[in-house]
Length: 387
Image 1 (cartoon, rainbow, N blue to C red):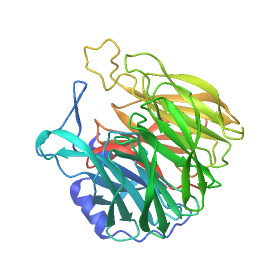
Image 2: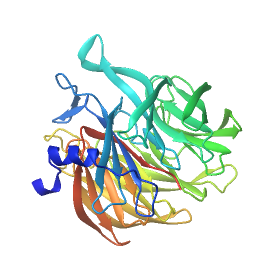
Image 3: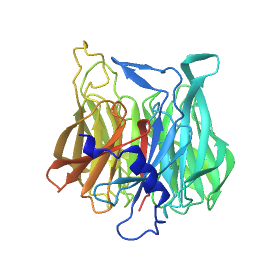
């Protein structure tokens, strides 16, 4: 197993001699936000003594196997869906949210935070070039295709923050109030930039926001697809979306929801059982596949009747609003985000307990383990640039 990991000296040498990526055909950047404030101890999320700083790892997903190409310290959090990262379409910078921090009044607890970091991915080494304030519990973040707006879902205060953008310069432009108990978790733009969806795990709704230039408003339209909607992905064609539903946390089988975005207004088209606690959903750039990370009880106490000593990665093919499961593999514990390579032949997921990316080869029918990439913390958020 040791051969799967870079030794520290080799890692430092690689960073020192790294050539600048120019967006060639083989290069594809994935960004992992890593939380060092959260450790799973027999099913309990605890704050370790003197935790290391949170970090952000930059990975070349186009390499075989994928490799770490840079790292920077920035606030991150496993609390919230693993879409706490957003990349510019040209892969020049990333946005990373930090929903929680160590409580200044008690180092064994965490408290809501509001940080939004802007990270220059072209700098060598990568660098945080701005730190802004969103709202408390800043979780899911997305950038529109035009690169003119960013939205952040703030779970702890029931709002969505709006930022206008010019290149990598962000300017706060107000907040949308969704209600104290709404628990907005992730927000994603439709490809045409005219609307956005917000998952609300506090009151089980999926809200539709209207977007007109820099004006973003709650349209008051919403859907109800499952218990505690959480992660969200919208297809590159803008015809459908997939939402993971966290469920009631009792060990029951939970679901993902398929939304028909061609309907006016959008509506829930299907609900699919996937197992205990679907955490992350990741869609391939061409919209042909959806990856789902399923906790499967791997984050529970070992004596819990619903405990399993592994999580699951599931892959579904997409035709319209019909999803068909085509592959499944056992993975690590408390796993979070999932991303596809550009050619759909590589799938990578984060696992908090193992502090790594677990990489699979995918041929459209099966998943085969293809190595692991070490992370400097528990992988909590993972994204690639939208096509």
